[in-house]
Image (cartoon, rainbow, N blue to C red; front, side, top):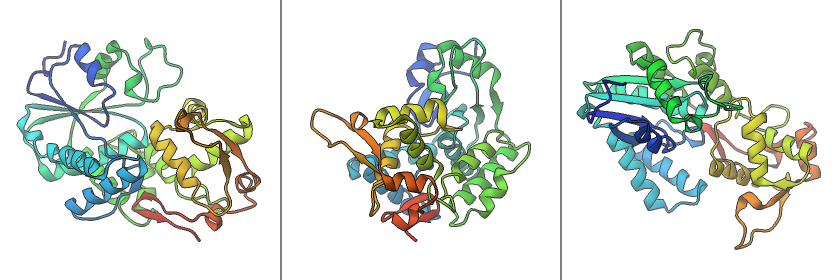
Length: 320
């Protein structure tokens, strides 16, 4: 079925969602998860060690993890990239959203720097095969075992220098404190990494809207609450992922961190029912306030109300 998949193959994925599926589908190589979520938090232009420490501090704070464990995990994942050359074959498994594509850009830059002497393939997918009964394709984790094999047989492309060059340009632009270069790359036609431009446009949509001060995620979240009325936070996330976000990229804890950043303000955009030992965040009911209605309508600018700090790559979003 797949003669290049041997014990000397490494499958690289920005999560663990297909780890078991690959084994069950008959793939026998090693698996590496590299899952630093560059779509959230600071992505500064810093030397490697300082960069990893910055990312680990963000991850620990945003997702309520122990700081030492977060740093240890990141260092382990980054160090593993230096060993790509130990494999005869490396396969990068990615989908089309900004979470995946920004990590793919980082990997392109890393591979161009490391220059491992190995065969590298890229699987980058924005749809499921016709045989899959999926209402809306969001990610590889939705695919059946046959779907994973379909990715291997039909969506696998040999890595080339154009991909490396384009990915490196994207990675450099992501870390800048201005969006100018990233906007230019987002308009690239026939990009060597075909799903990167749309992912960059979605990433750039997280910059504040001039009228409301809201990112697209923040705007859509408030709109869901306005349209649906008070409902559990987990159901808001479900609406966002299934039908509202034009290119969904958030995991559940990532969405909860977005909710918490929206709470960093003088006048709350919404209220949450109290947390109890018996309930988790997804069960807490969220209700729009008058301030939330006014901000969504553009009558107030969220950045006039915001008291925290948010990042879009290397761009810091602070109160006005």
